[in-house]
Length: 434
Image (tube, rainbow, N blue to C red; front, side, top):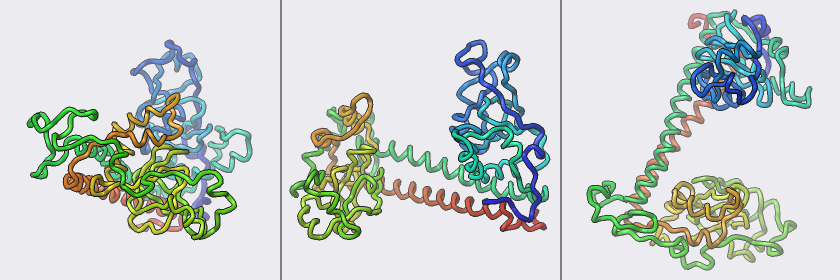
């Protein structure tokens, strides 16, 4: 990425009223910090935690005494903040009066260019800051570097039009992000409702408060009377072994791995609710035959037991000939009794599953999932016909979420290409539009 060869360039200091930075009042001092009132005090963590272009609030607030007695400064609305330490190049615009510590550069108005254009240019230019990391033992920049940072400057009308186009895309991205967030949250809530109350013969979610006689107390709380509660082990298929992990030790040596052949699955293939067919380790067909007890079947459920512990997914129906590894548990369920899709969802999201797995934690960290922990996990068991109804509703919710995620990825890709074209002058905004 480089500045446009056709547009003139100006340094940041030539375009803004002032480039400055603040300080940090004595940590924890009630003389300088307030609980809620006062002026927001921004640190890099606040910039990182803030979604979108504008920052209005922070974790900490300071009072007027801090402004009088320390190096702290109050910045007016519209000030552009740029992180200089650690995570460098984060950019936000203040939407109200705000202060910041010495790790954040403040580009204070008035500006001699369109401020939103400057914001978008700085966001796009973030990778340019990376070259400064090689010049110091710390991943920091300083005020002098910020002041002398070069900005390509088209005409003001073109600046405004570019900012308007990018703002519109940002708004669309933000709205879609909110939809994804809401759908993700709603999906977990829907899972809990459907797997504790179910769907009646009229296709409606049962209400315990309206028909309490249709519910009974169970180890998992109130559930429909027609359901049962069973440990996971009782829902496995009769294949041998229905639950497996391995091979271990001398059963498979590193020297026996080959570049092509039968894939050996591991934690990289198992993501939350998603199987990733990215194969990097293989064994020969002859070795795969020798290790046939570890073969993975269509619609098996896999859960990671090392590394990032507890991620689960369903194996796709067209998986072909593959083997599992010692980093995952692979389980084959009796699909006439329990749907693998519902098992996987519960392993990832159900509160009762998470509570059960916490029994294996040591010091608040789950380093592995033991066989007995997994086998003894209690699951609600609706009649199989009702399981299919529940699965259909949840699958529809999954599809809606997947569609919105795809739309979000598309918008982000569109913006990435467009911002580069517009700010590098590869694509000009038509002057009659500008």
